[in-house]
Amino acid sequence: MELGALRSHNTALVLDLLRTAGPEGISRLELAERTGLTPQAVSKITARLREDGLAAEAGRRASTGGKPRTVLRLVPEAGHAVGVHLERDELTAVRCDLTGTVVAQRRTPLDLGAGAETVVERTVREVGELVAGAGRPGAVLGVGVALPGPLDHRRGVLHRVTGFPEWNGFPLRDVLARRLALPVVVDKDTNAAALGLAVGGEAASVASFAYLHFGAGLGGGLVIGGAVHRGARTGAGEFGHQVVELDGPACGCGNRGCVEALCLAAVARGDLAEAARVLGTAAGNLVALLDVDLVLLGGRTVAAAPRTFVRGVAAVLDARARRAGGDAVPVRVASGGECGVAEGAAQLLLAPLFGRAEG
Image (cartoon, rainbow, N blue to C red; front, side, top):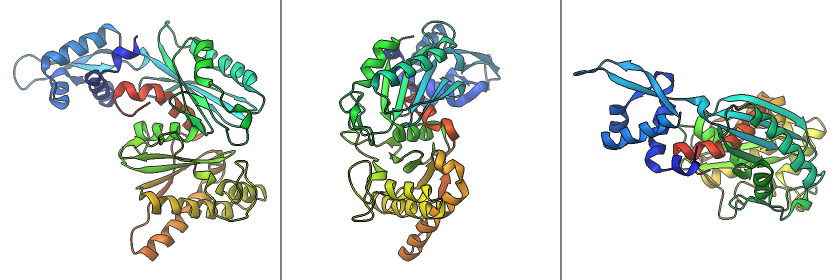
């Protein structure tokens, strides 16, 4: 399966309609009507997809006139993508089929500060285990890797990862691509999670939202106008390092009084309500700046006390909205749970196939 051939605009349109149609499928005539392509073009595209094993007949549907229409469906197991989440102290990896459904997963402790060689070796081993279960050769489209920033998404090169400056300049994408002999995409963990939510999560119909990830650290992913907003240098979304307390506690980024430092300190002393209040203050700044439609919370710290964090963040946003005379932006826990970032990392490979987002 050649990624380049699948990524044509017209093929992406057809694949996405096959994906969203589900097991019930969709006819060629409907594909032509909904894509604006000619019936001949749709026939050529679907013939190629069937030849590649990506599409199959799903039965026949009664027609308003003439013979019954053949209905086609996507074959989810025809291709897979692996998503890897490298957190500061844990590695989570998943293998997803073409619909983004997790079909296998692995989790193991990890020390992101143990050095590049150790981390790469552990990643290669875990990905290898998942790839081995994918079936026929060529069934894995590639590997998406998500980890804390800052980093360069386009080149797959890490910068001074917060708390681990020794990673500065490491070409993670190219090193893993050589070791795995597969295409590799590298992005920030929050961007990957936001992409997954925009493509297949509860935010798929929301034009603009913020995903705030509170795990071992704190970061944000932004979707603006339906697309992940990374910024020219992949610098957007460094949410945790906005300074909200001048001369506050030192942060791993080198500044003082960052939201991350304040939230982590509150969690360390067991004051989750205070952590939620500080997080809400920072979220309020973000909402005021970008006017997003939704705030989603994720990460294992949030997962340990979801009601506390949703209530605390929402209270701050509600108070600000009342003062401004408007409606508060809703706050919810993001879907995906502990594998949400890894699933989003797999979407770095899958989403572009369906024309859903830049991967």
